[in-house]
Amino acid sequence: FPYTTLFRSRDGFRLVVVDDDGPAGLGLAVLARPGDWWRDRAAEAVGPQQAQRWMPSPTLEIVHLAVHPGRRRRGIGRLVHDLLIAGAPAASAIPAGHPAAEPARRLYGGRGWQLLSDREGEALLMGRDL
Image 1 (spheres, rainbow, N blue to C red):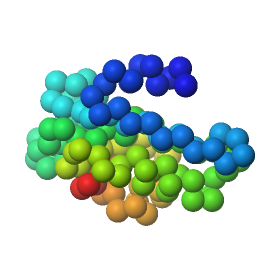
Image 2 (cartoon, rainbow, N blue to C red; image 1 turned 90 degrees about the horizontal axis):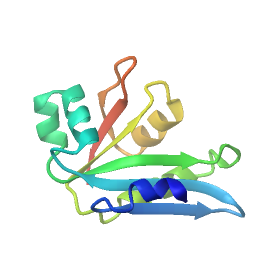
Image 3 (cartoon, rainbow, N blue to C red; image 1 turned 90 degrees about the vertical axis):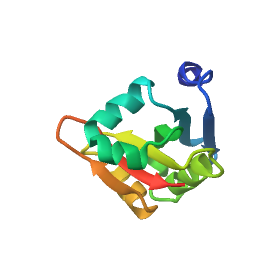
């Protein structure tokens, strides 16, 4: 997975790949700390109180979680999600997605995530204690 080379050297790198008679799902996460570009942009978007609550150091940053379109609605997203966060060395996690990504909203909402920000033109940000 060439995409993962961008993140492989990051602290806490996690990669989950699900094969169901072919590529089915993928999840990638890293640990984020103050000073990391993405974590700092997310903290700005949610404000200081929410950032303090949901983004302690470190926070598990879910970079990518995807399911092959032909394999959706079979529990693969839940499996990738659960494996990605299992045993993570962080107190909380924050994924980012497009505000109009309804499948992401359903997946994360069904797994106990709380909505932090979904302002138009910005990322959909959710938080969950681990």
